[in-house]
Image (cartoon, rainbow, N blue to C red; front, side, top):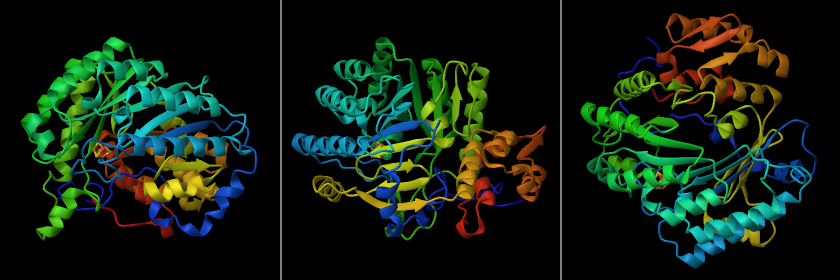
Length: 439
Ligand code: SF4
């Protein structure tokens, strides 16, 4: 049995989820000058543009959170931050790579975008639209913490053009929410969901985490039943991981523990498998290793699909990630450093990575694998690469393990393969980018 399927492994600290390629640990300050250069040329024809705005504020820090978030900023500090992001957008929107383009998708992530007041949201987005109109955006996605959503706030979120509202519920049990440091409680979830439905958002997504501290079989079943009762348009389920910069890891370290106090990988995968099976029975379709949608014709996730397919992404704000004409980069990760750079008219770049065409091909391949189905023809057409031949040995090995099949020019992941897809993906990395697999 390979590392990919050795499900009994306990949850140890580190990052499991793969969101980009090459891995972030290979990005560096050495090529930051490239960021300025790349924006001086026009875009490649046909490449869509996305806009990401990062709101790094939260009511409370969850114990499993690995993002840089601020829980102590007052209204004037928040205003100062938002002004900084607007100056960044103004500066970037004039660059040849961006000027004249209209975003295909817009994403507000965090942190907690819904932490902003209705007034702050309307003012922020009015000004953003003045610099870069999003009147042609196919999707405007917005992450919310249920406890921050009152009626006025939801109406404002609808008014600014949000089409996809994502509710970070994570769990419906108050005790589990409390033990894990979450700010909201189940009562707020019910109210927020009803109000959001009443506002008539095109798409409501519910986020859950399988394997929060003290999760049990019985409680997990109740989470799934409750989710199905609410009938969201899509459900996203992450398997709990414990990166190093989380409160849970710090507590483990202080207590000299190597194993996190959460379920092992086999149990977390079983929970997601059971959830997917119940959702399928309720009429949902599984569309990736993490998502199920109620109506696959109607419910799209433009941000994910376009970005994974190679779109440019202009990320605004502290610690945000961007992808510009083949260059990956991340903004400075401390709010003061970020604002100081913006005020002096400098790009707030922390680290970057110039990809080669081969790395872009691998990136697209591994991200498409997360959807559970890869059409090899796309890669022949776009990159002139026969992916089935290039990775024949790897695909054969995974097929022997029962994790995927190659059928008529398509790689189709089995459910068990899809549930450990992040682990499988390491097999397709260039040898110089292979890092420790967690599971
Ligand atoms: S709400 Fe999200 S971003 Fe904020 S602390 Fe919790 S996990 Fe982190």
